[in-house]
Image (cartoon, rainbow over all chains, first blue to last red; front, side, top):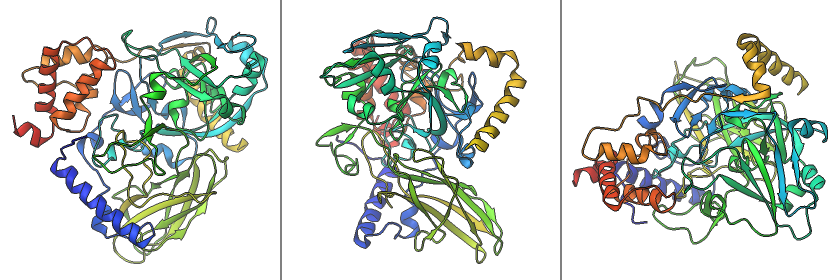
Length: 411
Length: 116
């Protein structure tokens, strides 16, 4: 790519390599000097100085971009497992619809099917049994603003995610009513959002027929936390693909088309691609030998309280809490360190809302003495996947899941 | 789970109470008015600012520019080329050069800006 690093980027980059080498040598995450860990921090103005804005049906969210809108959820909302609808992040590639009338809205199912359908909301709710799932919706590029070296794209901190109870109709039931013809391969999804110019591709995504048929949790959802979806989160219905990145969760859904071939559209073949390597990462400055579309989410965990930079009392217990999630295997354990990753303790897991949900965790921690403490958290899922000590890099800034950390002062 | 959703509904009912009939109408109709582009996201003054504002602002707000990390001139040039080649931005070669130079000088890495 012939990239020229800035001084800052180069310093981060070199530290990152040193850290990776140390971690690889020890065979364990979390072994590294405090200096090396500091390399993962990125307190630059692009992330810390963003304004709050209020969009229709939303509360104050962090403004990334106005048009098309990209609004980030402040971290305080992740202190609870369920993200309120009005605080749920917003991300559009093209212009969102602004006037949707349920009286004329139809969900069209066509293409390689026996009986093309046009379903009204009344039919969608009346002709199919409903199903619900609590699931995390996370942008592939969540936390891109922390990429080192940095990359172009939405400079999200960690708030391009949310967790809600989604209620709707299993997609495979709708496809069964339409009658998927033999030889069908993929299904495409399109919403009511439209590009600003005709030369720009409509936002269309695809899933394989197998992916849909094997998973009753893939829904056409018309309720979010028991309420109609906000327009900017997909009213009147959106696709819900639990465990997979949000790029597949097409909003303001209008068209479902069954294909007898693989979909070759822009948003599958040229965007949302990650290196075809086990970590989805490559050395900065190199071009991936092959790429694949993003799909299942990796394991992540966050400390939501106390906040970075907080003061706590030495010798008195503080309730350290946070969330963990993965791509649908479910969280097995969450470990907390308060000595910069030297030692780890297993924390208490909160209520289990299902394998696709945020899992709350907490730990009553008593800082033994005055001083500064680096708290770190890492989760392990039920198939043993965890989080790396050093962040992997890819050219689009996707899949970040490095072990997170905060600093607190005990006084 | 039931307890959780009860709490959640309780909160939402409270909001609905405040918002009154507007909240109820949303269930039947999704009508919203999107705010104008954030006026704080103005481009820095300099040669090429007007052209950049006009060409780029055609499809997206200018915070798509000012919110980007300070990458180098080659990366900004590649970004402008992508907008033309991939998304069909109606920008002539001459204007593309003006825009790329402006972006590198005002939103490029310090090293890149220093070379100009």
